[in-house]
Image 1 (spheres, rainbow, N blue to C red):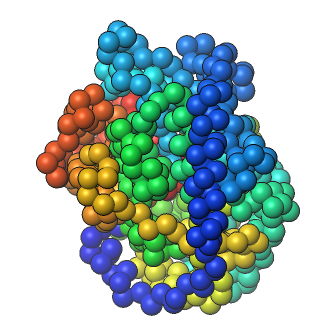
Image 2: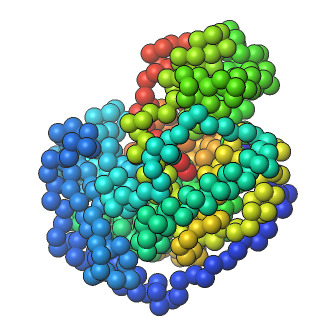
Image 3: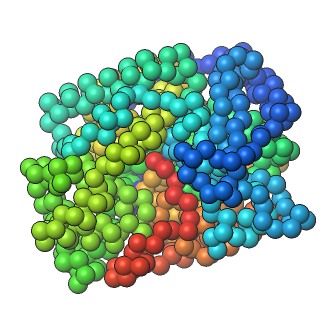
Length: 532
């Protein structure tokens, strides 16, 4: 997110009280707790029949796939069941080295980790893969796991589109209408099932998956949003936790879920956007986009204006440009690619920008599915403001100091103002001292998607948790990535259960190489979280 100085200004924003929807009753929560026990016992008996993965998963033969059934509604555990898809590779070490299954979730909401077992041969994961079966899965609503959809994927992927940082009143009315239509589409497509796509149910599903894998206790890595429902799991089932890693932590304070967390995220992206532009300016000899962050911004805005008049390749407009450069706010290994595309476009060659920013029709279905699950979970999880005036005021104030991402983030979440399903009251994450074994939190100090204060808040709520901070860095999701110091702490914890006494720091990983095409295009060894 943004720099610390900008982050501090959020307290001055006038945020009206959220419209509070009725929370589930104690009886309802008790029924869901009983239902989880029933579902977990059933899964422990039936287990998962792993076999060849469907071709649609595009996984190598070394990865095996299966399904686990979970109740749609945990208050009715014998009612409708949905099947979650699961992937696994067996631990590669000796039998005496095996420590069980390690489950990974990359966040979202709406992301799948079916690919996770493929990291086993990577140098950063080899020793962990010797000790653990690596397990990925598609959470409820995602992929083939009772997929959720809110609109035609072709409409979702429509391009080119606009992305004004100072939207007009007419543009705002247009986006309000789109948000209402999207929320209505979610309700019509999912029907009564819509209310059951929640973070609490994702945590309960994780408990059933643990039982189906035959594990008496859970070893889990959650990244980004995965840290939030991982913390819910730790709160609900502390005695079932063996090892738990929270990589790039969401602030779990119930007052933050989700409206305020998204405002914080928009604020934080401004600083990370400046980090990128400053890096480009330091390499003006390569990119010729300016010798200061301000000059790089001027060139970016010049490209945005040109695309508003004439989209590149007929598909890349301002919104597609914005989406492509937002990724540079998440991961600095995009920096060289994006700077090259911007530079080439201004020199008359739009091809690199088109290659990086144009929508891919073959991905439209998955992208729409991921967005539908993201929206359903966040809208169901908590109260949201239901008056447009609240959104308008808060985002107008915020955009004055953080224009890069503020309005696009608001439009993405605006369906929650008109949501057709009941809202929950967020669970107050936390355990008593001694209830939970030591856990590990990983955080980059300048992470924009999950600002650093969220890691501090999570540590405060989980007694015994250790925090490893990558200083002066902002990549989102740092475990198994390019920082050897971070990976040392991750490996020590997963293999030996060792954590720092309370906090430890790592120097930042090296900045991207602006020249080498090989290094510029090489994928990270780590695992990219999604959305949050």
